[in-house]
Image (cartoon, rainbow over all chains, first blue to last red; front, side, top):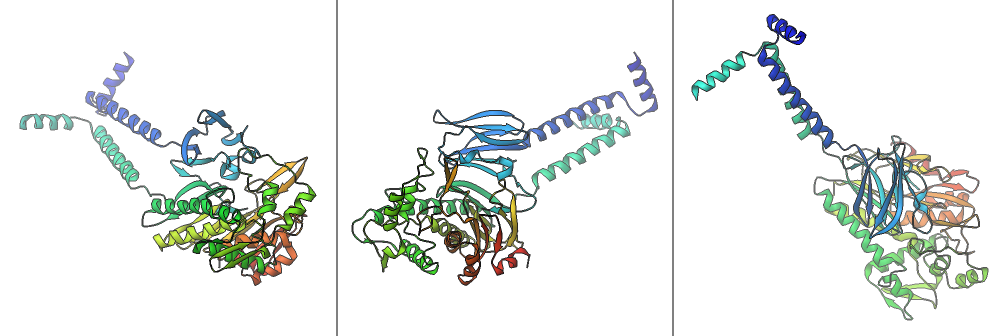
Length: 138
Length: 351
């Protein structure tokens, strides 16, 4: 009943008519659909895992925890995602050089013996890791 | 129809002014977002990462032609060179040379790489040596990328035996025929990554002379062209004892190459001792006085060999020698003291 009264008062002020409520409802739904579609298109920062040059896994940086990386039914390593960063652990390679550093420190995690490359991507493009330089040698 | 149209018009006219304004604002916003979405700036650079020559290869290209095609062509070249100059691949040219009892006739490209390697070995008095195949194999650094690799320390007797069958003086190139003294083995790992970078740059430039970008092979870098066509690429030098990404110096390049050799790149640890891949050709053991050398040179092949030579020769001598051989360098010794050659400072400023 109070809502009816308010509507009547607004109509009396000629700000809102009955038909306007339908227009506002339609606009509201349209805006909702636009925002939802936009959010679905923008994937944010993803951790991409390639094995033998083929992208095999994609994780969001929000997917915290240990993720098994496998190929041909064999477990190659685990990818640990925590605090918006990623790290290789428990690699099946002999020297475990790929377990050094985190993704944000190195720009890419690479296991040469098992041909695994882990990179950060934003909307399909590699993420620039440092603001201070373009590249690093050594 | 005409009447219905009039009817609809009347209905819209019946909307309040505020609703009409809201519809117009929403339509304008929708149009704006559509324009921004469809005409958003495309990425300036395309890139692709792959594994070749036992390391990561990242190619970054900007081209008005087809950058994807250029990326693929450059990476294909890396794989071709990897196959051809591998010491462990039984189908490679180097395998054929190393395992033939007779002199081997080689193609023009192989002859060029061997000839240039020998020239660099002579210029550095053997500090860079392309004939350390036996020593490198003995330490296992030719198999370090294998999943089954098991590190082991060779005995002193084994090292002395391998030393006798090592050294660039045991290689002769007569026109297109390679002659190795008995038991000597080639290993061009010290130049082949640099050679692949040089080839990659050539291919990119052949496909589009205006292409810009870079090739990063295991953090050895060759510039294809200036950033955005006119700017410098800022390149940090890794702190050899810092976390990955921490740096000790910053240089700016629009062209040329920059290559680093470090004791932290390929190594294994046995009983708490680190054994890395840069072997002193005179002693047969990993070099201990240097931990990192970085060389800037017009060609990556030269930079590759010179960084290894500088690692073996030590900071003081290398700082004087390198400019004579067409390079500039930054060296970090075992006490983490940093020494640079005189011309290094030229690259620290955007000229």
